[in-house]
Amino acid sequence: MRTISLWSLTRQGRNLCELPLGWDGPLPLVARQTCAHGASMLQTKTLRHMPRKSCCCLALLIALVSVAGCQPKNEYQEPPPPTVTVANPVRQMVVKSLMFTGTTEPINMVDVRARVEGFLDSIEFEEGKAVKKGDLLFRIDPRPFEATLAQAEAGVRLAQARVASGRAEENRAVAEVANANAQLTRANKAASSGAITASEIDILKTAVLTARAGVEGAKAAIASAEAEIAAGNALVTQAKLDLQYTEVRSPIDGRAGRRLVDVGNLVGSGDSTLLTKLVQYDPIYAFFTINENDLLQFNRRHLEEVAKAADAGTKTDEEMRLDQQVFVGLGDEDGYPHEGRADYADLAVDNSTGTFLVRAVIPNANRLIPPGAFIRVRVPQEEVEAVLIDERAIGRDQAGAYLLVVGSDNTVERRVVTLGDTYDGQQAVIGPIGPEDRVIVNGLQRARPGAKVTPQELPPSSPPATTP
Image (cartoon, rainbow, N blue to C red; front, side):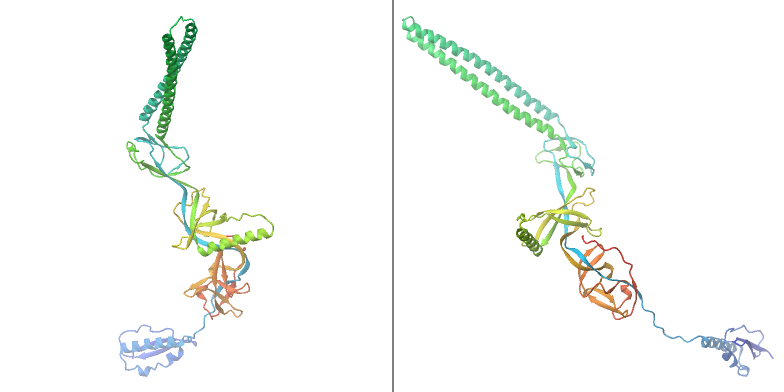
């Protein structure tokens, strides 16, 4: 009788179960890892009359059930508390500041225009390059202006010649006056003896008057020629200026923009033609607006300083001067690395916005700050005591800012705080928080209020700076 052999591997060894059946080939091995209990339940008499395919399926089912029955039972195990990093807040003196936003403007922006009419001969600068005060930028054809200057100078020389001629005429007229006076004197002596008639004396008197009129005419001619000299000199000055204006030079140190007129074009005809633009980058202006309340606080602090100085017997300037230190940060910068001073404030509060315009001067030697840039402005005020914590510890939701604090039993507690200024990565907070609290600074996403955590202390770092 042909049989089917079913092998089973148990803790006691290997067992063999034979399944007698009529079939014409050996069956494949269907299970090698089954428990002893599953193998012993297989009775050969139950399979004695089963078909070949049914026997194979039953053997495979028994093997799978036996393997599953031997596995250990799954039980739920609670995961360990998440690990978080905690740090203690620091209480120290810091400088309270006011923060604003603003924009930058160049301290000088010049429209370079043609001041005389003429054809553009050459362009003497590179677009976008730095230029110095007095550098040649454009050249206008100077020949017409040279001719005008020469004509004006010739007019001056002609007037000078007229002055010389007038002086000679004056000298001649003076001599005639002297001669006429002498003749008149001799005639008067001769008239006493009857040697000359009265009519001849009248003729001599007329000669004296005519000679004097000649002197006056010569003086008038001299004055006219001198006036022509003055007018000629004015024309010469204007001609020299026009000739000088044919060389368009930079009035400031700065950076030149693109040329707006090409060589060969007529410029200065009618309106003065815009040739290019110049911008001075260093220093640069920072404009920002403060609200009315901040302005009033500034005024009151100044009055308090004046009163304290008066009580101490120290003289102080009662005028409110805006020599205030400010710090500026660009859009891609952390903090406020650029230092400057406020130098101007508007005359009145804008009643349409309730704001007050302030201007500060910021050094910009490397031309990092461009005109028209958005800036953040920090204005230091007074020194106060504050509680500081790492900025990473701040959580935010619709209810506002909060901190997650680990209690003595490692339970997480949520505390709502109000944010103040930031100081080198440290955030000033106002609320129920103190240096003795352990605040989560890393792992906020793994911590939940009321849940347990495994805290790890953050290594101590250098204290933050007290100034912005």
